Length: 378
Image (cartoon, rainbow, N blue to C red; front, side):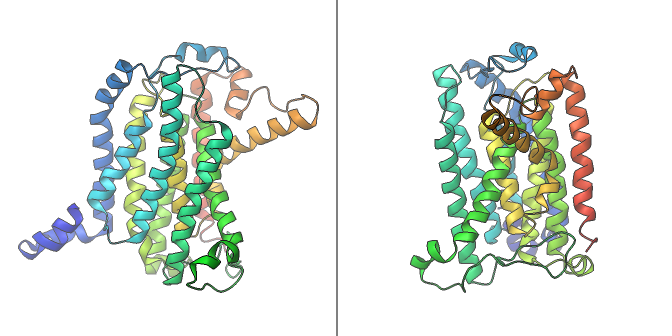
């Protein structure tokens, strides 16, 4: 909105407004806007959640030290979502289809989380959507995104090939047969593509959700991951950088840089209130939205595999749950970890919560740096 006002209207009268046409300017403004918005809306939102008694329920099987967190306001992810959506609408070029797909992924998964959170807080116990209901809603949202991606591919605005780190030429194609404009053939001809997009987006969303168990842990890792994605979207959209790094040049991804910068700013603002001891929790509305947003950005810039390293701790957290459940079912009740997700395992070993958080942040930062170095190691 402001992008259009400054570059399409006011620039005709004041030439200096052309500075808002540069994505670097809008990235800085978007991150600052989202940070300021999150900091300003935080206190009234927390008070409103307290008045409504929308407090966190703590599982009985969880760490004993977490019982004191019971009743802390949850659904603070509404603050994060607002801190991403508003600056994106203000500073991005809304003629770019990638922006609308990114917002669709963010809001779609956030809506699922909101439904789950609202059911929990109104029932006053840890009962929201069932795991199956939540999963199939996520699948449906991801399939809608995948369908629009195929429409972009039909207009040659999106590639369905996969970029593989460390390899220049190896780019497997997901489409089973050439794309046609017969909509009725989509579900059958592009099964592999749908499965891949669903796996990336649903996996990313749930991985962030599983990581959200300690004060500031998930949101701190999101700052790191979204910061890395900001770099990736920028270099993918910049022809000189893309050529130097042997990346596919994706000019449409330029506006995603604004979206990712908004994620960084909103996450920083939320961390102000979510750091230990937390004043508010993001809830599923925040974690599912952030994971979905991260996943759709990776899909749009063709860095789905690199997302494994960008969000390395998220992946490890999800794998720890899968291994724990698998071991329990296949080995007659035997567990690999003292508790899952793995951050609770380290708590059970005697690590203070603040130490677990700081060390996971460090590990996440190292993995994100490694992901960026792979761009040239091809």
